Image (cartoon, rainbow, N blue to C red; front, side, top):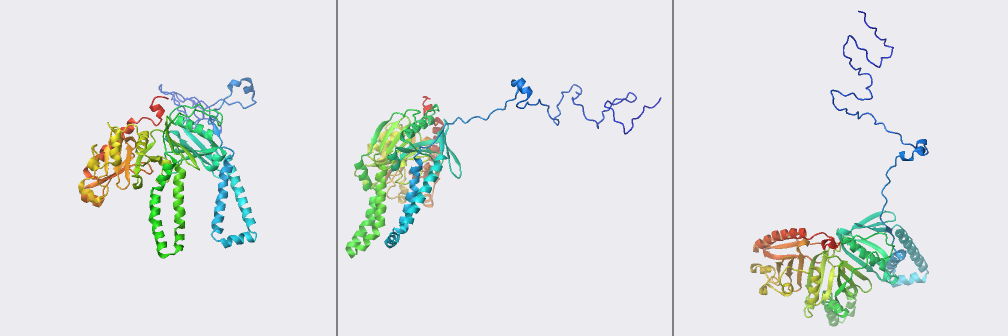
Length: 549
């Protein structure tokens, strides 16, 4: 049998393999694999992932195929359009903000030359004042141009979820205030803004210091309408966008005034405050010294102190003047201010803690001051009016202010419980206040029998102070955290202090010198009460909580 011819090495290898002596054909591994995969023993065909997937070519614009069949063109998805409606501040805003630069420059010049009359006279006499005036004009022009550019680059938009603010000239900044974390909305009118009919809308958001978002400046009616819109959105109501700029989107909720502070009472309360007390402590010895030594030059020592005291008195009167409080579905509305008016709106459930205090000089008039902790406001200064619910009022006014925050105290006789907290003590306690044991009275000789804590179904009440009476009320659902403190002397007497952590503010809930075992049990029980109250509090959108949305 003749052997089949072997192909030459220079000849191309045939595509189909040639069988030899009936043996099965083994595929030539050097040849490329067939395009279509071959199934083996009925197994499913697995595509070759190393090969590119054939696609139909996309006709280019102007292609004949595209002209013949427009439906065959592949359309790529377009990016989603920004549905937010962007707005700008009032055009007069640069003028209101730019004048501050001029005032600052004048203050610097006054500090440099005003303390030396001779230098000031030389400045006027040799004609250098022209350069000073020219410099002031240049500074004012630069400040105005920068304020104008800042106004051009500033815009804001409102959605159901947040307020978006874009600012910045050299460095762009994008901020947003989430409406579900909105704590308060203030309409502020500085003196110059009041003259021009403008206002600043300030949004206080839970998030620590610097979290506030300011929209300055808008027309007053636009600012008030925007406040109503934001409160409606924060309450869970849907507000249709697209209203014309400056037009009312939603109507303001009706309000009912509950109390106001007469101007005469405010002035008397400031004169009876701690500022006047400390002024007497420092001024009286100086006057006695001048009379005794007959050296009137010592009076000039009191000039800086006099201006400081006068400034503190004026600030308290200026910020607390025309104080009015009202209640509405939006929350608590507060209005106050003389040269700078402020209209605050604190939505329901945003007050974290409440403090009612009475100084020694107010005891004869039975006046009280009510302050509150609101997330976003922060600060603990006595002159910070954002945290003031009642600057000065009668006992009935103070109790009414408490009812605005916590209408249900969770007891059968709430007024009697509040009275016991304001002026009661361990000797006449009939409501179950946990008080300081007698063995620890040496740790607090003056106020040990005033200290106490009472737990109700809705809140924790802490009373303290003999010289300055104080009652603190913390709703259970607003308890942030709890802490047990025990110093070396407290360990010696077997007592401890319970600290209730709240948001930053003037109210610091704390009860000192409780029995150690009682304090530990109270901490565990209060932690459980706080968890349960938060679970039952419902959503932050109070209109949805009431089922009106």
